[in-house]
Image 1 (tube, one colour):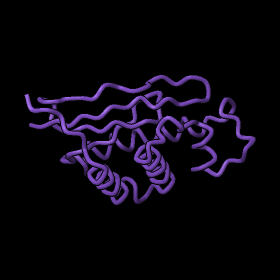
Image 2 (tube, helix red, strand yellow):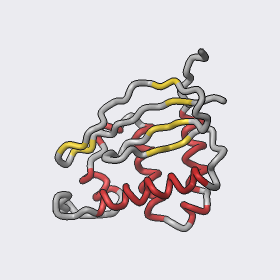
Image 3 (tube, rainbow, N blue to C red):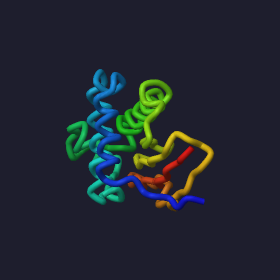
Length: 145
């Protein structure tokens, strides 16, 4: 079995750039901003600092009185982002060597390759959403066909 090689920061950034330049995201500025924010936080090693509240204030400009229990803005937008990513990889990004996937119930991301016949993975970190803290469950794997 070929050992797994994690995508480099440059490869990850290229995957994000391709998404942001795609038809799916050129016409969806708010979702593009959310995707960029989530990925930048992850690239900077701040993935465990991502909370529903911080997304609301940093990405959507909500004030400090934002109540995530009453306002579902972030949950709705992350769900919309998840669907848009799926659509991108089913069409324009079908041949992408690295895929960004946001697992349901998280604002984390995982990167994976398109070929299902080989996959090596790094164990999942976190995974469950508790209270207002979003523990991004994510893992990386590269598939080779």
